[in-house]
Image (cartoon, rainbow, N blue to C red; front, side, top):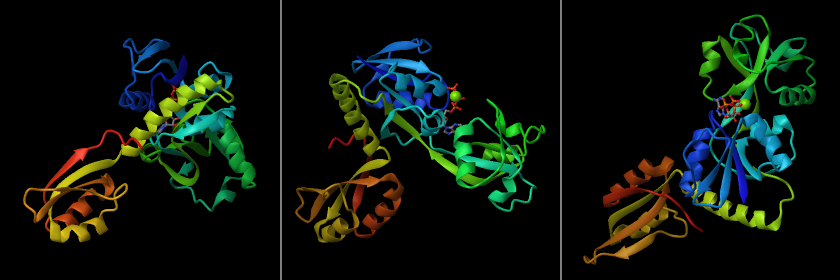
Length: 283
Ligand code: ATP
Ligand code: MG
């Protein structure tokens, strides 16, 4: 049976669980156990610290895992990256005290930089010919400059709010991360088949995320115009109405374009526009 490792608690736990739930896979309750059997798919779920997931998957303790790309690259474990999951986006950046006069990467020469990501930072320094001291600390990296432990930090940034609170400013964006699905290299055929089934479900959810299903009544005379402004998956679906001068048009629209498209559709006479959530796109 397939074993999947996910973060036991923390920023990736909830979204990992809800992605699985959308794929019809739920963990039996009693969440804080190390391992539980899934419902809806022949799979066991292992709850680990995110730091341990790359190694667990590399060793085959778990066949697959969901973890941030940052952890995979930092731990440098040999795993296969099989699907990008579109959540947990963040970046690893260098930040310095707000008032420091940054002159480019040369500013970092001779400085002490605190981080929990010494490998990724070391590679950035090597690639850019920077001679700085890497000071590895496990947590609360952002307070290091204020307490005199370092001159700069290299840490995860998403909104930047934590940096501002600590009197820091981001000066170099070094590495971009999101949650990814990884697998043990060289798995047996039966496991690969199970993984393909899981990937099929996950892809159909990832494709539908951020998409809306839109239905409207449209005067037939506006149809050509509507089709031009609405490139659908193949082409929009058209259904006749009992009134021959009108038709019903169905289309899938990315959420980010929804209101713009709706305004255009209204301007060419669309009425009774229904916007529905899309759960899956099965191709
Ligand atoms: P664990 O106890 O499992 O070791 P942790 O404290 O190391 O957890 P979290 O803070 O829960 O880790 O972050 C887990 C992952 O979430 C990060 O490695 C990163 O990939 C992702 N992430 C996304 N946004 C952020 C953010 N703003 N801050 C921290 N991590 C983020
Ligand atoms: Mg961790």
